[in-house]
Length: 174
Image (cartoon, rainbow, N blue to C red):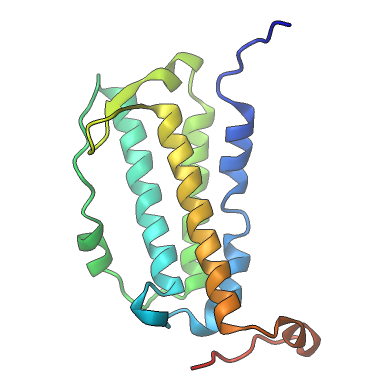
């Protein structure tokens, strides 16, 4: 049985597009406690802010790999980026911004010729990675932070069906 290569992988492209589609919903679930930091960990707002930064960095790195031969990427100053975090805008607006950024990343990737997916760069840890790997990394980041929002929602709001009946979002529990 012979198979024909499909570049880009259509499953990856579909998942990239869909991976942030529910982010606005998840952000709305955690909106009442968007700034609470359980056990000193990141708040829901910080997760979405971080995802926004990562999306921009990854798209920039993909663009650089498309322009230059074997660029070397420096370590991203995540701590420096997170130090610029502010409580505004509201998490739902921030989620909308992430979704718009992903749309731009998706459009960039959608327009690539098959051979462009093989372009490589040197990741900060010294590994050689290709554009396809960076696209998958963007997918992973979105799924990871989406899961974090759902986990926080479950932590703060264990009785979710009552909220449905009332048609409201419960106040955060301290």
